[in-house]
Image 1 (tube, rainbow, N blue to C red):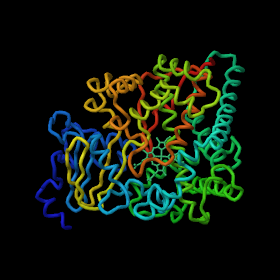
Image 2: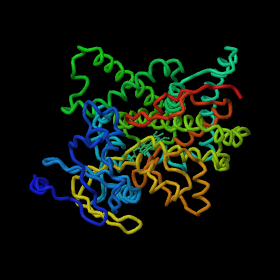
Image 3: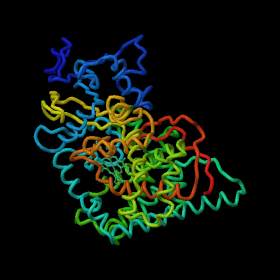
Image 4: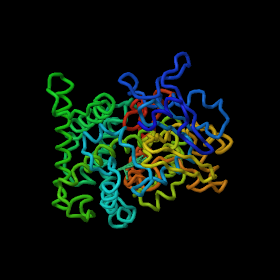
Length: 495
Ligand code: HEM
């Protein structure tokens, strides 16, 4: 309410030397892709909503050309930034201390209804701090990459992948054809879920149960989460809805399958299987349930996104694919040392996350009026309550930050060699942040596990097969995460 007079006078609520410019709620005739907020009509194209904020912004040469805001009377302002300096300053200044940014829970209300609110992903303040400490031991680099622990994981992960690829290989050999046309996404998703549920959480579900029941159910749960966030403004829980339509009754079955998956993952805790050996807490299962659900759904989305993007880029870039093959063809075990030596493979993976980040925006909320400062000395005051969308997707594709002048290659191109140029310029990881795993105190705790899984899956596929994309263009589909729109459709042949 206190904002209303200022909002009605259309005064800019920000201060500093890179102040964002306003965008209009409606702007007929401007040619903008859509309106700058989610509606039941545009929510399935979230990247276009973000694009709307920067419509025409490239003509503006001022210091705030990468920052835009929406300020509608009666609502808190929305700031969208594609400025890596600002993204870095805000992610660094996120946490549970006075005046730090929170994670904005508005874009994930659907997730919270599906998993519970007391999770590492959704929680803020002391809840988040507690959950973060709990996650530190099983996910931390030191425990996961302890030689003994690492070998156990690497071995079970690798056997899982090899068994699936062998089946594919046999199928191809028996068909008598030299190549098959296949959507890789469903294959990758099943392997990722298998690694999570069976290898990581220590459950024992069969491949068929995972592929035929749990993967489709989880896909629909995730779709429902996205729809529920935008459409279910009243926040009515699914179980309160009568099963009058096929969609509601299917959703209830899918959620029941999700509960079962959580049950089997938690049951393995009492036998100390999988990661549970590393988990030092006497918290009751009930207290861990929401987080296990977040890990199952969130990690499946993110790892599938990352691996399918990497494969879809390599499928359109035969030269890069061959270079990766040269590096991995003799690798038997994916030890951290072997992976560290596979320089070009690492550039390809890094370039994948830069160009096509799995999480395309990071949501934050200003818990107080806050001044932030970028490493090049620019300052911005963000008022209390502002919803902040850190638009990583567009930041990583802008010529100003990643283009020819800076990296030697156009920003919107998949060019692993740009990392060679950056290394030659002596630019370290700190000044080439692409935020693929986030940054600062809320950086992804599953980063090391995720990198291991993605490295193994992509490396093993390149080692066994040659693959070529069916469509030249690599379009995006976005929901909770981004994925290649064609389901990673490739022509696959044996090496
Ligand atoms: C390999 C693919 C993955 C990618 C690209 C990825 C990406 C990210 C990103 C960008 C964030 C930061 C979100 C923000 O700042 O708002 C994040 C946070 C998170 N990730 Fe991941 N992630 C991956 C794998 C995983 C895995 C395997 C797990 C767990 C098993 C996981 C669990 C989480 C959790 C719980 C958070 C929230 C952390 C917090 O708020 O403190 N992620 N992830």
